[in-house]
Image 1: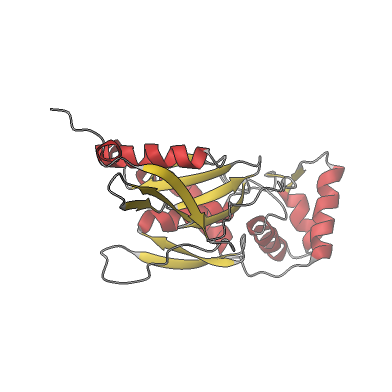
Image 2 (image 1 turned 120 degrees about the vertical axis):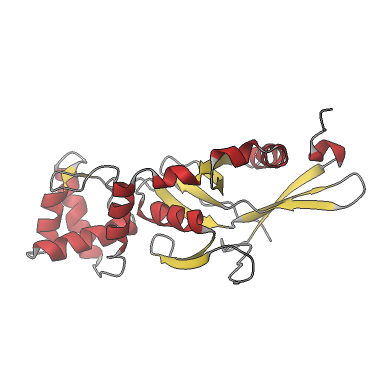
Length: 246
C-alpha cells in the first residue's frame, strides 16, 4: 500500500515565508545536548558570525566565504510554514541561502548523503518548500555533504585563504588592484596583483587573499593558486537575501 505524502494527508495550505528583517539567522542552536556539532565562525564576506549545525554546514560555510561567485549568504535564513486542515501548523527552516554573482537567490538544504533526500517525508517537505520559495523568486538547492569531502585539495586552499581574513588593506589598495585588472582587459595574473600591493611577496599574497574574502577581487580556488591565476573584479548584483517583516 502506497502511503500518501504527509502534506496531502494533513492538508498543508497557505504556505508562508518569514525571515529576519536584518538578515540574521532565524535560529541559533548553540547547545551541546542535541547530538550535533554546532559551530560559529566570522565571515568577512557578510561581516557577521555565521552559525552552523552539523559538520557539513561548517564546511559549506567556509566554501561560501571563500567563493568569489557567492555575494552574500546566511545559515538558518528563514522559516517556511503551512496551516494544516485541522488548523495546526507545520514549519521548516532551510539550512541557509545565498546570492550568486549573476543575481540568483538560492536557498539550500544540506544532508550527509544524497540518499537522505530520497526519503519520502524529506522529499515531500522539500517539494512543498520549493513551491513557496518559487513564489518569491527563490530557488531551492540540495547539497550532498559527502561530495564536499571529495576534493581535499580545494578544501586545503579554502582553509589557507581563510587564515588571512583579518589582514588589513585600504581603499587605495583596492583601487590599485582594480586599475591593474582593467589594464589587462578585466583579467590580470595574481602575481602582478600581489606585486603592486606590497614589495613583500608574502605580504602582497596575504592582502590578495583578504581581498578575495571580502569580494574586492575575485579568483577561483578549484585549481592550484599560482602567480598565473586569473583575477577579476567581482560582479555586484543589487539583489539581497530576502528579508520580511519578521
